Length: 364
View (spheres, rainbow, N blue to C red):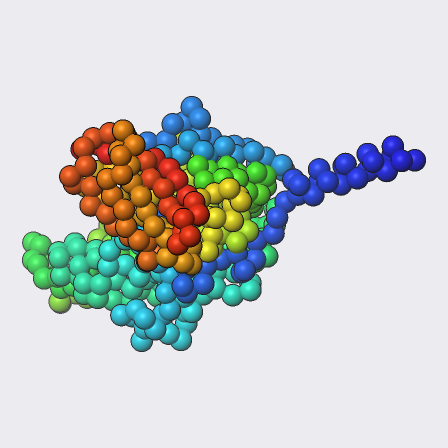
């Protein structure tokens, strides 16, 4: 009897350890969420694979590269230049540093996250460099994620939006004052796998979303005499993206866009640190993140501790070459006078208790 009980308990522990998770609105970032997102444009497909659908999968993404950094910042709709257009239909907005001039607006609730539209500053889509600032509101909210999401959760949605480009030119006998891009989007999503995800910053239980998007861009022109005319230019595209969601991370931990054949990996975005997320992936993950690494002229230190700490940098001979307090979430240090090579760093609290340590390279 005791032996059977032991076997049952062992089985229950194993099932609990590897059980699938549920993603809810509590796992999505609020209006103060901020994350540092790395992009891997040179993925080593010999070591990185999106894996297979199914239960209890293992995804090893600890070899992801950091080719460049993007900062993801959530904010209130009222704090954006497009508040008057979106305040009544959206409750969250975000920007990315690698998409300057673009504000993304959405609705986040207990039932899911939906994209509502875009706010585009002047010249964002410069066909003629005269694009005005405009609010692009989707005809139907585009679902990004449904809540609660579990294994085999799925949805599909269709929507469209219009981007105007004010311009003035003559083509043959036509006098064009506006070019318009009309985008039609059809999305399909399936949570097709669950398992254990590992990135360079730790491991977590995760759900994998298989997200397929089909778009058709039609270009229309407005003639001052004839009105709107279809320009006979359709751009058709389809994409397949895999996203991995974990509890408490605020945003997909890893997102991989497949290539045009849908058979191979193309690029990956992955969260290196956030003000609410990545440290919870594993208890031994550092709450101090230094990037880019390797660096050239400067490095940034993201400090997730809620207290003043102190940074010490040492050269290859172990000599202290720089020290400073870390009072802000992000501190930037000029490395323009550093020689090429390997450097180490330590972070201590006010009582000289070690908080973090690591190494970084300078390559010019």
